[in-house]
Length: 292
Image 1 (cartoon, rainbow, N blue to C red):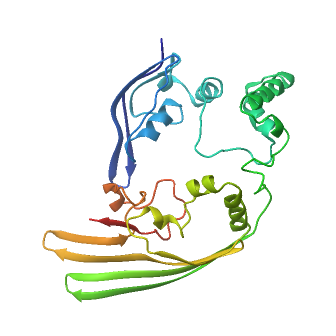
Image 2 (image 1 turned 60 degrees about the vertical axis):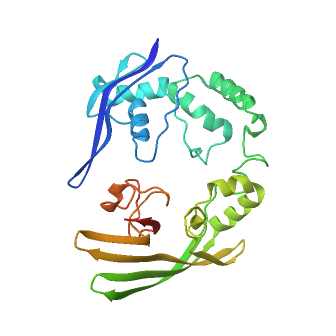
Image 3 (image 1 turned 90 degrees about the vertical axis):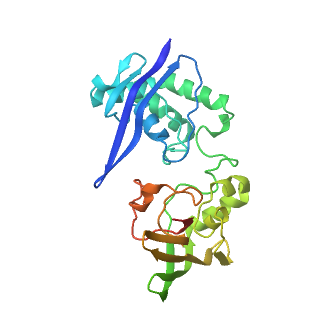
């Protein structure tokens, strides 16, 4: 019996004058009890497909059936009710509500579902017991990822200075370089340092700060001048590229700000919009290594 049926799903996003096709005629059937993983490169439409399957987004064309419910024929209230009772989401981030205890976080969805208080508390305790968190019912234990950082208000600060230079070698050849020195301090940095000491493997896996993002790039152009539990001072070459103008186009090689990928994979659409659709701050774009 099919729990998910998708037929000829198409979805196109518009950015200015550009039409970007995220999904082009996708068919998918998932049977009840079946475990399915969706894999593919960045920008291939995985998130768009999952959002449509979860009722968070609607296709431009095609049919979506989940548990015999046709999404395209449902209003927003009906979709919200279906998500509440039939669909579960597992996020990369924890997405816990910081002012609630562990058991209250587990109870919250059941509260929205109208489950009686005694029943939802018993079920929440059983769920915590199943995953080995029976001792964290009313707060964060000593081995919790959240215990060393807390949930209170913090004060942070940052400062940076940037020097830029463009050397024109000829009418069609130039080199550009941007030097940046930056300082970060405050409660967030202190808590990150504390978290790194307590859970070093987790901290290394999740760290994506500016001073250490170069480690996954082809060239490491960042140097940490001083790092303590209270502050970190670093400097880096955020731009260092050469540009050659030819009769048929331009060739650029080095570090430049034309991609929001991970530094190894280039999405051609980034030439037109170098910021991720989810980015809020768009004043300055960190450079990446590529040739185009």
